[in-house]
Image (cartoon, one colour):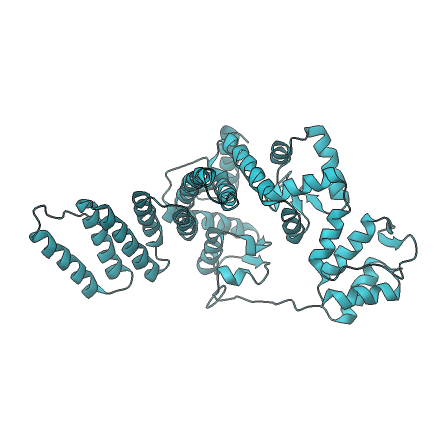
Length: 454
């Protein structure tokens, strides 16, 4: 929607669900900031305003918030879920998160110390359960074929489901009365050893045009819009729609039709692993070209909402470029995109994400002045109470860069920031005093005194 329509819809929604007129302006501005329409909202107020909105919904009816594939979430979303869990204990809000174990790589303490937190681990299925699953999927599947699949699945239901999809794509199964039926003898089927090989075999069974289309889509991400895919593939909209319908029918993609979903109208890979396998079928050169095409499409949209995606495409293109002038140019583009994404994340209160983006920018930055600026920006976000030791590390690195540049006022400011980190973050005022005293002594013996500001 355009800005006027967006503002009207948000205003109507807030008016319908928030009874207290005094709360409405802050909530409305916070929701508009999330959509990239409003700016200048204090990041400290955003989480509180969003949370209050859901609490007001819960005043009328119980609210259930379901987050699928949370292992793909950015740190800002994880922070917000933690915030709601901590502050909304007395509201009728239930949060359900579904994730693979990789979530704990991002957030090792996920759920630790939280009240009313329950964790359920899904173990691999037993052989009997796999037999039951396969019999339910394909009632007529031969015992020998079932034994082959079960032996190689290692209790992973997705392996069984993907095998059935492969047989369906090969025409060896048909859908009849809501169940898959064999069209011939399935006593002896070639089942790939691994799930990755199985998916690769499914993709190999597509015609060349559809394989290329799936690879283009994989570059765009787990979900993508038809407009983005058209821009990347160069396929006309009418032809693209019919081919996407075929890929949905082949159960490689599905289309989001839930009107409540922010991805309404977008296409989504049925499984993340399908996208991963399709992506790696492309040569490095082809991947780089497609990432650049995706970045240029996002730039044409002229919206801050795509800042994170834009940065990820430029970073990927840089990583695939090798060394030389092209890589240097891509590094510059990646830095600009990462800084923009970090600014948006910080504006939305996602300071952990902002620090991560700025640290990525540092990895592609050689210029000392630019490194100093990035380090100070990262320090400012890190100082929002996330990681005291990191506050000090970033402040020390920024001071080192400033000393290398030799700007005395900038050095003084960096010393003040580092001293402040020792006091406010790690509670070590004696170290802060040492730093400031040493700087004062050096200033006293210097022809030009140091002048810093907090």
